Image (tube, rainbow, N blue to C red):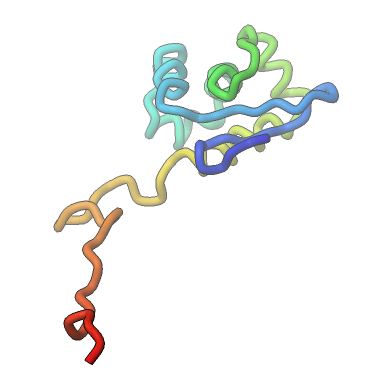
Length: 122
């Protein structure tokens, strides 16, 4: 079963449930294999079968599945639209909405507002 907090998504192929995870390691492997960086990948690169096949291959391995050949991954993508959907879902889950900190710093853990009073009963 896929864990959305870990950038995972599942799909069924030939009667088997497969889980893929888009991890930093998987993204590095995809960049090495395709020569396309993450920001380029998220733009024009998602329309390239080689990029999708690489995301599927390395995402499956990161999700505990088998390493497919490039042609096996491409064939799976062409035969099963759920594989491509799972890649998109896993990418959305894996990447933050706003990876850039604001001018004053990162708002991921803002300080808590001060409470009124001393915390003691009167």
